[in-house]
Image (cartoon, rainbow, N blue to C red):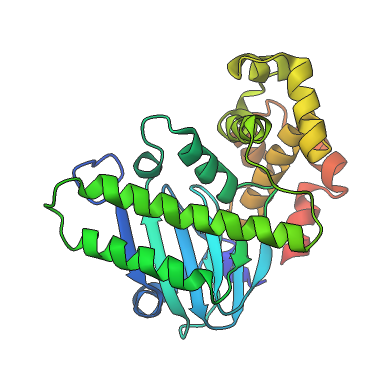
Length: 299
């Protein structure tokens, strides 16, 4: 991995806090990379969500501190605040979809919440999947409808239709992921109350992991008991709630060690540790290397 990423990470926004401006945009990947490739190939993150559909091309895409293969018809889901970057290839063809959280999750819809939290920035799901020649036609039809609405900004109900098309686009991909899991003899994926509760817990951890909340405090926010929360995570992930919280803290520490110039003490304070020496012990306990060793091993 190149040393070029050991720098302050750039952050990008999509008309943040400007609700009267575009909250959902679509771009053709090839011209986008030719115009913005220099920035896109450096570690960065967004305050919005991004779908990258590589229709043609082979290479690598980097999400957090891992690299993933890019092949024809692979789709990546980049959550807000998730560090990623493109490789140097400018010949990809495909589509980019950008949208703010407030655009997709509307009126507390549980399905929209589930899609947003399950497909994007979920450490227990791969950040990408491949689609076949059947579903790509369906997804292409939704993109035509999306482009039509985006080209007619004054039409009645435009944002509502765009939201429906985006949600339908994501549902089709979720169905495809379900089929892939079944074909690989993985546990059957069922969107039920327990699965939605798990996603809510993971989302709460993502929002609060720096605050040092107890398991009972997380459970209280979910209106369930600590025992129910523990049973939930152990049943669906084989992990305790404490381990899930620890993994999120370590993931953020690894992001900052890899993609920022902050020293270890600064990272410790950023993650809510009062004592940097305790942070070093904590990190080493969960990764088997010290923060400094981890940073050196990457470069």
